[in-house]
Length: 67
Image (tube, rainbow, N blue to C red; front, side, top):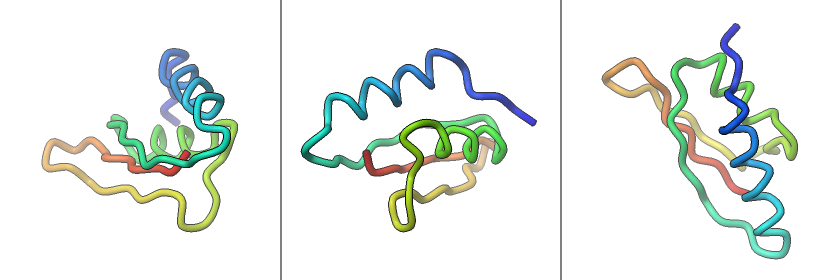
């Protein structure tokens, strides 16, 4: 199972604290589906309708999430 880097986890925490009153769509690229799922489950986890993932031609995963 691929783990999310500490830098990526900190990015999500920072974005969550910056947007406490207004949610904004964001984008990150993860190396594989496990990393994408782990990223979306970091605090705060995304709920229904708050994320989408797409497989890129290079095998990585585009993650678009609302935070």
